[in-house]
Length: 345
Image 1: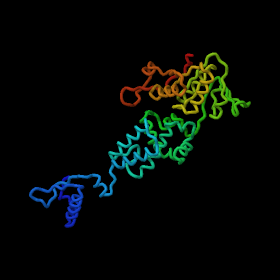
Image 2 (image 1 turned 30 degrees about the horizontal axis):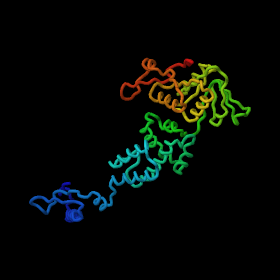
Image 3 (image 1 turned 90 degrees about the vertical axis):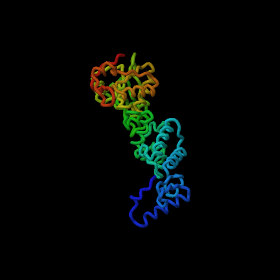
Image 4 (image 1 turned 135 degrees about the horizontal axis):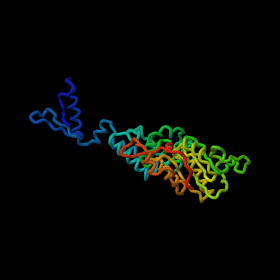
């Protein structure tokens, strides 16, 4: 670094104080001073010799050291491997450049928040949130009821980075089994639900028009009505679900509203239906876009059963779809554009 004497304040002591400080650093082998030719009393350039020693002298924590401190704090509190390890490595790389990582700045005060964030992530990825409301999950994971709410935005951004791209915060958390509350399920078709206990006289007929609302606590009392062939159709959007259960009435089929990405209560009902009728065929009708097909893939993983897209074919997309407003030629078709049709089953 060159010394610009023109920028030193024009006070008699300012130049002398600077030169004394630099000479002291030179004696401690922290910097080397190059003098001007023909004017040895002037410093031409300051060369940094020992950056760590300079940081200690100035009481400054270097970015690399701070990043390492934060990394060690997280690793000491949470087992980080796989996806969690990749997220931490991404954070450390940003901290070393002096950049915030998902809202976590490279400074001493960040350690507690970073540890809490990664504890929440580890618990979610391990499935510890399934069936829990968010505050109970927070207490069990980090001992603070509002922790998830405090971290939610950036936490979901981190989860999108490792495999939940394109999903909203609510869908990201719902996919991992965590609900703001345990929602009821809207369904219609050839089943009865006894509530509670399962053998009670109180019975909710799934054939009630146009559909029934099932509390999660009643799922254990679900039983199917006899039929030769059965199909289960999940529908992504509420308007289409309402049209379908009013306009298409087939007693062989069961129609379930997913509310976008399926909550765990919806998955629980579908598992009950799968187990009660192993021969049932599963269909899903959603928007023709990446999120719609991700729901199909998610249901197949959760049910360990083939799920056939319904009215989600390329021909419809080409004829009726519109640009998605994203880069490239990607198109999408909202399912509300189409009128309900009977299942091909």
